[in-house]
Length: 147
Image (tube, rainbow, N blue to C red; front, side, top):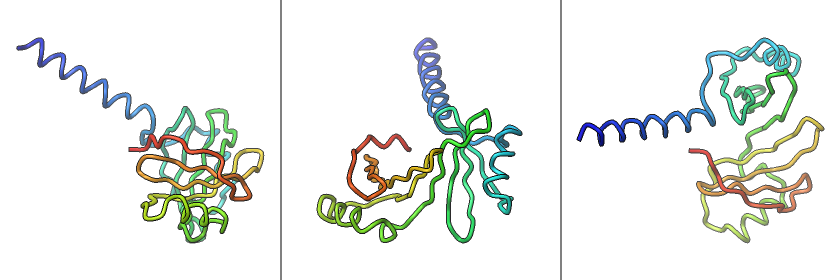
């Protein structure tokens, strides 16, 4: 019985630590990360930091727009993400969603810009992330790993 309780406890701890390793709150980001963030958004002072895929992700609001930015440990921009309403996505994306996902609830929509200033759009359901190129043409669907 003790062995079974110990095994269940160990399994539970392992599950929670692997979830936290993927996307966890951090109190603060390293100086290089904060320096790059300040260059990009000098007026923003209230940032909530997380780690995601080995990078630091800062979530914040600027000009009444919810955004996030990913910066690696070296202080290099990985990507910027601007959160949108479905109605703010390009018409080609909206048309695709209406035709292929009628009645499906979307949890999040965004415009993502990578370090090379190339944009794409995303629309997320509970299970999938639908990705569209910068012209709003469907590219692929990925499994949604967000909890």
